[in-house]
Image 1 (cartoon, one colour):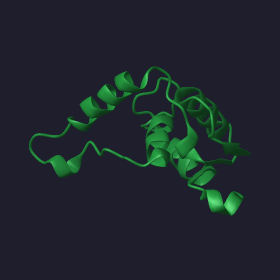
Image 2 (tube, one colour):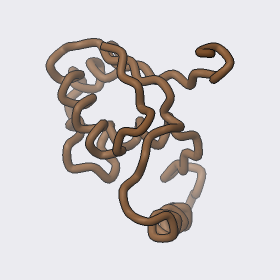
Image 3 (spheres, helix red, strand yellow):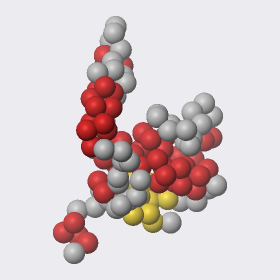
Length: 113
């Protein structure tokens, strides 16, 4: 099903999308820039800035990768970095399911009006 991200909470929407993907349903999420994160803005900003400071000492280009786009932040949440309700990492079939059944789209507002 097509899921609009506008006004949804990040972790709750991630849990719903992860469950639907694991059940084998195709899911498309649009307007990821409208997804809300609970808590006040200052606290969330401090958490994200702390995340930006994380890097690998020997070779920082190996990760962790710090996505700035809202769709990629949501993608990382569903995949399992920082969410307890996400997809398992180790199984190749689950990763293949993630690629096959899940799409994120950034929709321009001019196209919808």
